[in-house]
Image (tube, rainbow, N blue to C red):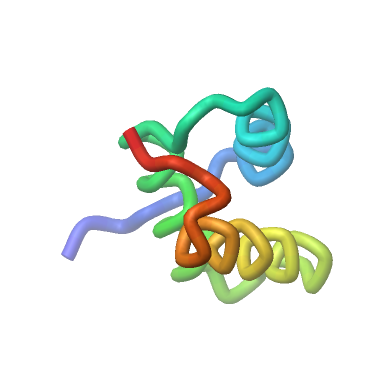
Length: 64
């Protein structure tokens, strides 16, 4: 399996994009996947990812 690496600041960029009412793009979804697989993710970033995924499940955030 290829190594997945999260880019620095990627979670913040995704959150800003979603706050501007933009749908999650495929690259955003890959970034979220990398974040979930990253064991060194900060607790704040992990909570942000969880919050974003709950918003997708509830239909508040659209997926492109």
